Figure 1 (cartoon, rainbow, N blue to C red):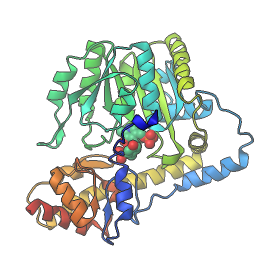
Figure 2 (figure 1 turned 45 degrees about the vertical axis):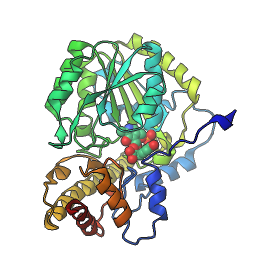
Figure 3 (figure 1 turned 180 degrees about the vertical axis):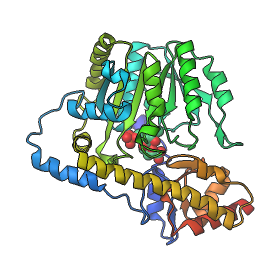
Figure 4 (figure 1 turned 90 degrees about the vertical axis):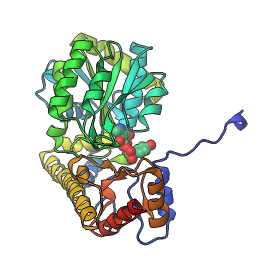
Length: 398
Ligand code: PLP
Ligand code: TYF
């Protein structure tokens, strides 16, 4: 039967890594896959993670199954990280958090859960959004539609257009929002905009669904959770998919969470039983190691402080690189304004060059980036920024 299958293209983002590895040009730069890199281009294990792993290794006494929701202790600490321990939704026990295989596992479980509650639901995603949102949510059978978000001319959120479209969305449908550090465009909602969307959700009855894959990479752990915490306080129901891949550097361990805010504690109990039934129908139980490390860190003041420092270092390096790239582009004679790179947030921005220019960067300069011109800012370094800025200016002149 398998002979009928036709070959499909590889993930366009993940595929860039193989092409980068195979390139022998000493000047090559990898701005593709969204993983954090240090000045040397490495993605080391965080020190807090290493210490937690050693402690966990010594204290782990059993490999017995952890059950569909994952470890209760890890879930409570993750919930507190996302919402804040004293958040009214948390203290009124209206939130349930489960451990999931990364942010992707969380998105997929959420999609199946929505499908159970409301099979004809439409989920509205930003234009553009992370490409994987489409299969992760759509393969569960949900209808996907887009709302306007990034304006390539102003290099900012077209909030009026966004609100106009969201104004047509009603009860039973969902609106997917990026909690912070929008992937791929780097343009985030400000606080007034979060407030306006919250009011609209209350007025029209749609359910917000927030994907927070980069908490701590924008302005800080609490600052980046502003939208999540505001909505959790105001709207009756909310879905939050979160990931520990970036902020704890745990990518391959597949650590993430799915938090659902319900209208009441009684709904939460009923909902949780459905959510766990979805989990059992997909992978039964989440992987343990990554979340156990997160729990070990968050349960220790010393390790938490160490992690906060390392997270701040990653965040500040990205911010500094944003300013540096803009400054170098000016220095190298760029005719257009790249100031937006400095003002956007998180790991990504669109350079705003066309596909042909992207291909020139890849083929003639060994600078690897996604076709959309999305760059991973963390792939820039003091050592390569001059070459990068010169190359961008060169392809823009042609
Ligand atoms: N959501 C967004 C917007 C992302 O960029 C990512 C990617 O890393 C994820 C979710 C999923 O992350 P992971 O499954 O690696 O935890
Ligand atoms: O957008 C990115 O680059 C990251 C990493 O299938 C990623 O979110 C990319 C593709 C993918 C899973 C993760």
